[in-house]
Image (cartoon, rainbow, N blue to C red; front, side, top):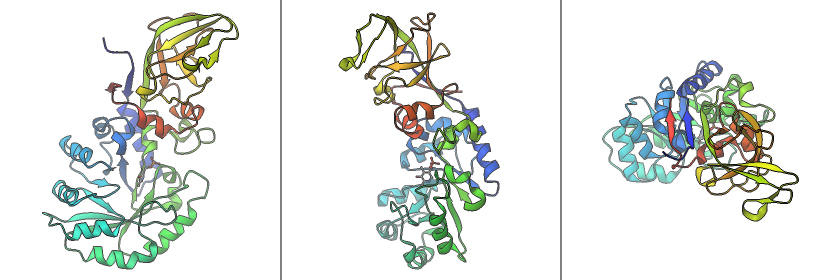
Length: 357
Ligand SMILES: *Cc1c(COP(=O)(O)O)cnc(C)c1O
């Protein structure tokens, strides 16, 4: 028997969330963002669940090749572009579309003979100050790329720093509009958060990631995933593997970080930080045991956590535990641990088996 921890991936929920993007952004084509192994869900599950997407977008070229091997013949966009001449050759060979955000990437492209033209998304820094050309250089960069023999279609792209806060993306949006106005190119700006403001943000392409996996791009407390019409995709489950009876004053786990104040029953659960459960989750973090909500107590170990089951007398070895998913939003666990759903989902470790259904 393998250890009981399991990440179940619901491909119908994936399709539902993609349909939600379609509804919000009816005129746009959709890049399903599947970087970081589809936010921890697995590229094969994503290929299946997002079969109705117009394109897949990711960072890792090996995974892009895997998508081709999985039979995806449509567009694939490399979001950080090419890191070498070999990448440019592979992109050309496998018909990947490529983001270009530095002069160095243009120089490598110019120096590399390619079997066929590559479509390029030119990334502009409109205020996030992470990747992209300055808008003041748009004429020069676009002239160089549009006259390049190895470049096919051009698309203009930018990325928002604060689309999760009301109206905080509008300044960047204005800069992007100013630079793209009057040019004969398609545009792409919206991440998940901005897809919820598509009427203002617009663009021929949108690039949702987290919402496709049923987690919120906003604050969990103000705009939880369920209120956005999203369905959770990953349910992370495991089982109780031990029970301890504590007397008042008994301490639990490393550092004795939790001390029982009364007689308590503690369940030991097969999941720890080496599975991707956040080590920073404090006492009080929610968890479901046998369908009932209770709380983590003490420090998260590498392979185990401890949970208060004093009020759950039916909990015993083998009782099912949900760490997050269908009945407990990943965003709620993340908020308790001082992080975001994105981090928990992408951190689920390779040793956790995935069941795709
Ligand atoms: C990751 C990423 C996205 C998706 O962002 P979400 O917040 O997950 O929707 C979109 N565009 C780019 C360039 C990205 O790197």
